[in-house]
Image (cartoon, helix red, strand yellow):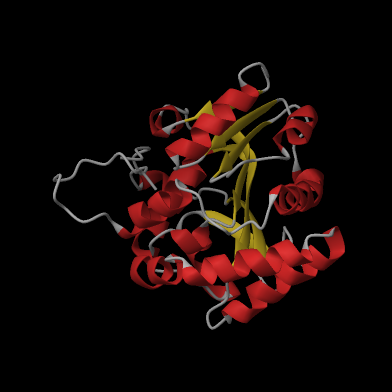
Length: 261
């Protein structure tokens, strides 16, 4: 989701850019700091078993990445990318003194050499990517993976999932972690905000498990569905995939360009 693409000054923002604009400004997705911390603590706990020792991890669409310090201790290098300039600015300030963590902008992401990533994390991102853009993005992710690398794609939304399911997950987390009242207030603020309008106009991509596996296979990734989702929304889906063995026929096919513009 490149918010710096070339466009006419009067052109309306793309669907991807609408989501970047939403995440780039204050919003009520998280009820308070405790909610934000609990959210990322759960993600950090769930991804821990997948982190490669002394390997390179790319967290694509990382958000505020509050579990990054703990993740970086378990792997050799942690690369953080988010399409929101405001999020990247916060991350750069937090991790400027950590040699294991590097914050990437679009240019830095494009400069990563093929085969340089041992684990690609894509948590709660697919729903904000236009479906037409996903095949090209999957191929770019595959090119970044090392021969033994894996992609962990999590928090994928099933078609027809009611928003009430997400509301219930947030309220459950609020009850368990002591911010239930704040969750109720945040949900009210979110209802009164433009979130529903952005979701309707910019789109909210959903996939069945079979559709995810099919798209992974077409991009040269062999995937399986994990028994439980990564993160605090158990009704969503997670998948892990690795580059499939290339056949002689594959070798004759031109490799997709690694370019995020």
